[in-house]
Length: 316
View: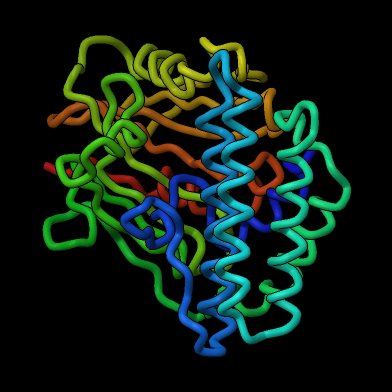
């Protein structure tokens, strides 16, 4: 399956609900102009692959799974070839063309939903290799930390906490997201702040969720959160949750609860590992969730989550 190869290339742009690539009116990733800018061309090429991967995830359910995967791969191959025609770097041009050919080969197989083809895997790995230096951020370990949550900070929330250096916070306003807002809801919880690890050279997010429904204990709220997270995929039989572990903790002197769980996507043979804690505030229940792309990245981004938990203060 292409999941193993995809996990490396998706690191370069952060698949975990990162901002989508710039799109044309037709809905396809926009091609970079033929400027000779390797970073811009790699951003477009890897962004297109990320969009393909997201399409395969969201289109995995339903009676027409095979045809949905076939169309996604075929559309990707056509757009990739259009982009390759504008690229001046020979290595990148060749990698994009091989990736397009691999996608077409899988699309023409008897069961494209299996996503099994060594040539496609090899082409994806080659694209990653060509673009790795151009797209991997460089972190400055001397960069100062930042505190978010208070009025005037990047995210104004019911709580405040410190960030690991270079992690980038962004306030989330669901009213501005339209249909995409559902991606930032988990049951009654809504994202109010998203902190991205990419500027620090990691892949993952710390997201802060808020629910105005306060009845119940922190543990009960976390149980509802985990039950709602990825529910649609589980109901469709495409995912399951493994190794769920709850514990009691104290945050800012208040009773809180913590959970770690491992979602598994059956269609993509892909495992993630999430951590989250919940605490009540005067403005609602807050859940802080650590969301790496895959289970392998959990340990790398865990320090940001632990710092948030250690330094969190409930705002008055």
